[in-house]
Image (tube, rainbow, N blue to C red; front, side, top):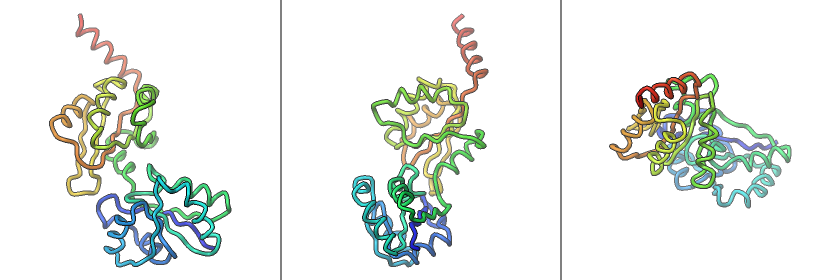
Length: 239
């Protein structure tokens, strides 16, 4: 029986693709790519020639039926995104759900994703954490941040470089400027960087250094004792 393969691709360093992922990409009948130009570059690097079809957030609702039908008719298919694991803040969920509903086997390969390296190197507890991905850009954004401000688990956010400063300003307003964060950018790439400290310190850094690249913001979980101490310190300063 043919299968749908979910294949993670490197988020920067091309050496991070697994041997199993390479073999799957060689063996499937065709590849679904978020951007065929980006995937073409990877396939050329790996010496793989394979038919590709576009599968992205603007057409996935219209294509899942045809893809599921192709798999049901005996064609093995690999789904890749531009970088990382499909379905994690990338297209993939709708196709996986459709295949599950139709009894089609879905095989998900382990591999590259930005959130795990970021949360591990943050220095915050990573035995349990809360992954929020991209926050709403406008409507509901502040309300969601307020809801998360008392989340005790380590919090992981994805953010665009164009909104990093704004996001940190909003974290300062809702979580408090003293809440600790680790702002990680360009994971696995040449200019990888991890800025650790309070929200205020991270904000000062990125106001002075233009944010560039792909960002993951890891936020320390809410600690009621530390929050109360911060309130007490503020009251002492006022006196």
